[in-house]
Length: 235
Image 1 (tube, rainbow, N blue to C red):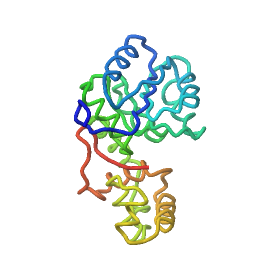
Image 2 (image 1 turned 30 degrees about the vertical axis):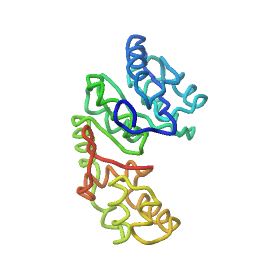
Image 3 (image 1 turned 90 degrees about the vertical axis):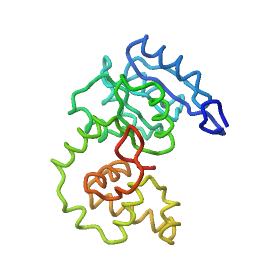
Image 4 (image 1 turned 180 degrees about the vertical axis):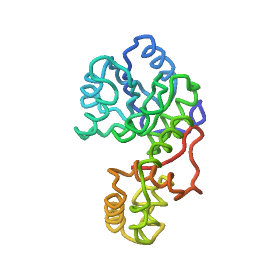
């Protein structure tokens, strides 16, 4: 068991910090550096260097500010996704305009927090996102769900088969394909097929967006969301 009570990890969570303010980067590096299970592997001062460093350093998590000079966080998110970078991105921003949340999620963010977050809650968020969950500050979650519900209709949900709905419930609860296959007593290949079909029918690009869609439509609501977030999904 580690000093922070999280249990031992085989490898530390590798974190890249992307923020244009040196003081913020230094503060994050100092605080995260004392965590037994987190290693800060690099710092980026803008979106371009964030993408470059994410490709070369292969972090597990990118802490991404949205407002940066040149290529901002949203541009960087889009580019990371286009290049197939595996790192999961946790937005950490002072931008409070609600209209920024949904575009960040659509660009691939796995979480959205504000810079006034409690430091220990940030550490918990990094661990949760690294474990495959989607996590939002309550205000950000409300903004995202409100924007999504205004633009989505029920046609996609109505098109799902009963089995696809079952798979969606499991996705919303953060379960992997292997766990879903075990629960439904089918092969992982069959689960992958169901996932591909439901993504197409719902008009979403990945499991994260499918989980958020499920939350908007009250699917899988008996799952246990994280303390600071509204939805969970595992890649």
